[in-house]
Length: 417
Ligand code: TTP
Ligand code: MG
Ligand code: MG
Image (tube, rainbow, N blue to C red; front, side, top):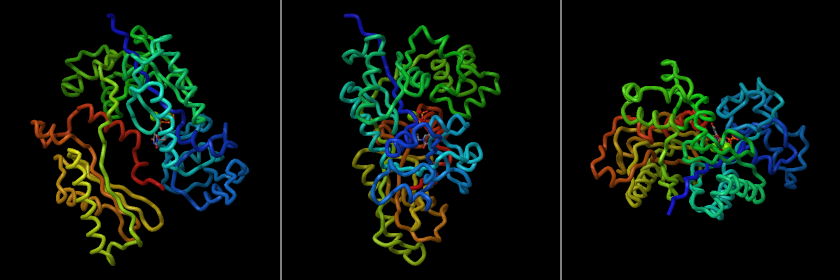
């Protein structure tokens, strides 16, 4: 039996948060719209009593112009991107670039709802799907009915149509022999596009791109490569692997070499490992750090115990300990700290979380407190001899972290609700 050629798709929704907002405010189609910042008084017009969201007149929508504050853009419509506006940019800077752009606050719950919807559509057609976050997935087309037709193009079209029909949203898809190339390909024809990359397209389609386009090369690595005069993937591919290992460590150096040659064997994994575990609670009445010290302390200890119990029950340990608080004015703040040892012990977690708590202002009353443990590893993997104390090293996990940091620089610091 000859084995089928591997066909892996990466599907990513177009301007995701903004496109979801446009579903309820269709009058904004084609206009520059940015999503970000916390809900403001001006945003009250977005919830008319009669619920007729599509009837809100254009002039009633809040604009970027005159925005003052530290809010950050999560995403922008393609019309807004023409002004040079994009994810992670400060709202004040965006206001200078396009003062007339419409500014809408984020509504994570709604985005998560649409995230579930579009993924259900995919699963109904192609069950080998790997979740990669709110708006993207990998899909293994290889053995799926019709997955080999026109090198994956036919199935990609069917998925786009099914998602559009059930959600009203468009997405872009890249199909390639592996995840690495598929991820790059999904960007080629955005929005609402499909791109196929085959083994033979490497030189023509991939090599001219800047190194940063490789998922796993973050800004720091890119900077170091640039200092060495390496800008394109072709230049990276031409590097001596021994030199790369010398510069970046053995495993990451080796990986850079493989990636530049478009090689990637990672399977599409359908059982997703948890990234973090958290517990949070909203108080019956807002509590003050000084006046309600005892009560708050007790809740805090209980949350740490609960997260610790969750970790133990599910067999994980983690080393990034974080806290989340929401003030009485609904502003939320998170802080975290990455320790050099993995833990699932309530007292240790309490200790590190306590340190995080010292880094936030506690003069206002609090309505919510949460504790989170991230950078998880299976506890048995640690027991099997992986060092509990790991110096920062360039594993794939490390690259993922670098990615996340570069994607969500400071916007994750203060999440508006
Ligand atoms: P992306 O898929 O990176 O961007 P996008 O879907 O908005 O646009 P594109 O058409 O280029 O794919 O991210 C998905 C969502 O994640 C995005 O809609 C908002 C959120 N996000 C942030 O909150 N901060 C960020 O820095 C980025 C990049 C995304
Ligand atoms: Mg997207
Ligand atoms: Mg995405």
